[in-house]
Image 1 (tube, one colour):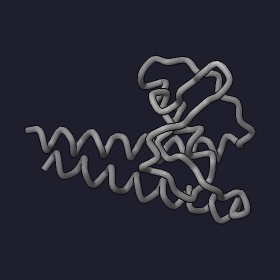
Image 2 (image 1 turned 90 degrees about the vertical axis):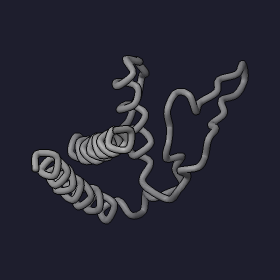
Image 3 (image 1 turned 180 degrees about the horizontal axis):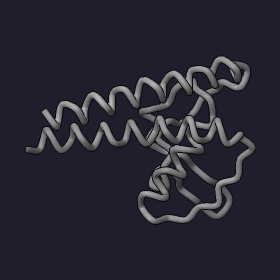
Length: 116
């Protein structure tokens, strides 16, 4: 019963996060573009005169804020400090942060379940 309640709580949290992000997407429709979708330090290669992004399996059309927030979320989780500069509002940033954190929580929950 306890595990089921956790799952239901996460799904409720996910539904709310999706609604919040969807509202932002509607408001910022003109900003929608191609994004990487899995922007983490391991997928960024720096060379002397160029920067390359690799591992494009999550490439899609979305708001660029997703890549910024995902990179920050991943970096914090792995104790990395990256200077991330953006001009998004606190409300927008928080909405995407909640979505990414919830998706991460769900991913780890189900990964743990499949390894039991």
